Image (cartoon, rainbow over all chains, first blue to last red; front, side, top):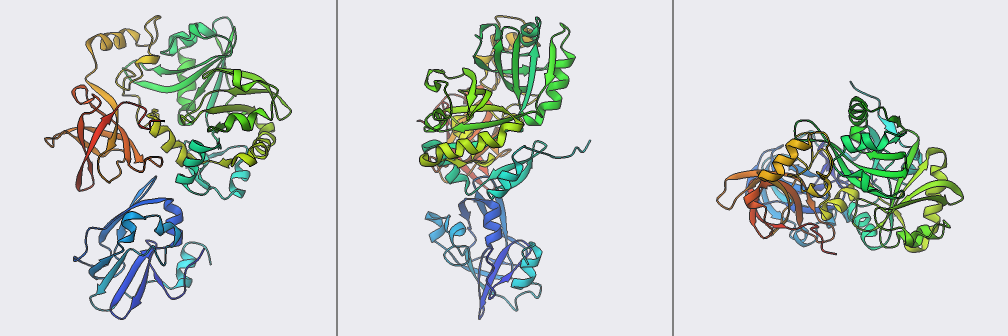
Length: 126
Length: 364
């Protein structure tokens, strides 16, 4: 499975890409595979500010529904509008076209975000 | 009471095909090979094969076989011809359902009952307890594999493997014959998908040969292995009940819309009370519904009326892969059960409108 080295990861199987004070967030290839076909990404929290660990939305697969947890603290400034019509992008391209939200960071990103290596180890793919 | 999780005979084949395996009803089962939606569509449009060997099979034999079956099941098994199967249920003594099942008439004094994997021990205990007439009972669940070959191209796929004329087997009938060189295979024109096809019962020692032969024969038809995930969405589009969700120890067959398999032409366990319930009319009913807006109903979500009052609960729900909208089953008071009635499904913090539909939800 593919876990790009330039990304950071959480134990909830989200990835974070930090560029300046903006974080782009999605779910990992492992997460999309576990969930199966994603049919609905519900994020109605654009403009709201969250702390690490809070639920900012849900992702629905055919068989299951899962909460989405904030891997960083900050304000959600953008939602990937393409997922409205094509939620399957999360399955097909979890790190590129299937990104979910962009967040304006409040302060430094948490220190416990995992590296590519640590995440691979967590899911037993090291 | 933690029991060891069993494996089906072809467990290694499923693993090598890349299936995601989950514990289900006491078995390690393939839930998905590639994609729930793709697998679902393969069955609707072509042909797919489910390994449902976790299902239980009991043989009921001897001169008292029919008498026992008539007492423990709600449908009228005396109507069966040899080579015919019927859907039925075991009613309990308190108004609910022990399990739903298929009854196969193999010969004049031999029947096979096919029950849900999760209920094998419960059902076995139940029929043994009620076997006061002295029928011979045999639990052959661990000896048989069961493959459901479903979809519009299922018949063409299987026909090349057997001398039995499959076209001549009507729905809910079966033949016992040779398949891929293996004798005494049960070829049953039944299924849980609404897509047509056959269910194939074979001894475990022949399972891999049959499985491989079916895939070889179906290669040009686009055959694929199908997991339990798609099995659930396929049955839900048809509005078929799932034991544990839509029918339980506490739901009446009449409430569940199973009046058609509840025959008062003969006495059976709790038939007097069910008959009275039928005459009085049931207070609640299992209905199928389709969401009128985007969202996915799930088990235990609340059902409200248009005034916002709680009236029931979703028992099964998903997004229909064929229709791309939320569908489900749930119990509502009878006054809300008429097709066309608007109900509200509470999906997390949202109230979404749905319409009650006549089953099947998928109009083929």
